[in-house]
Image (cartoon, rainbow, N blue to C red; front, side):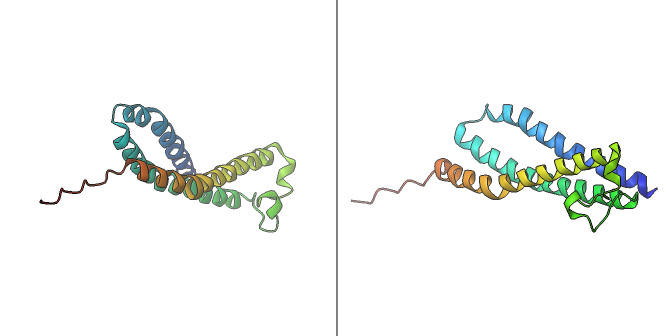
Length: 143
C-alpha cells in the first residue's frame, strides 16, 4: 500500500511539474498576447509567482518521494554522497545507472529552478515593475 502511494505521489509530482510548465508555455503565453503589454507583464508576473510555488512544491515532492523509494527498496546508501546516495553496488547494474540518470536530472532541474527563482526572476520583476507601473498624474495647482 505504501509503495503504491509513494509511486502515485512521485508520478503526480512529475505530472504537475511538467504539465504546469507546458500550460504556462502554451496557453497562458498565447492568452497574454491578447492583453495590452503593460497589463500582460503584470499578469504574467503574478502567474509566474503562483507557478513558482506550485513548481517548488512538486519538485520537493518529486525528490522526497524518489529518495524515499530509493531507500525503501534498498538502493540507497547514506555513506555514498558522491554517487548521489545510490549504493555503489547498485550502480553496477543498468537499473542503478538509470537511477543515477534520473537523480542527476532532478538535481539539474533543482539547480535551474534556483537560478530562475533567486537570480533571474527578481531581476525581471524589478524591470517589469519599473516599466509597467503607471504613476499618478499630479493635479494642476489652482491659480
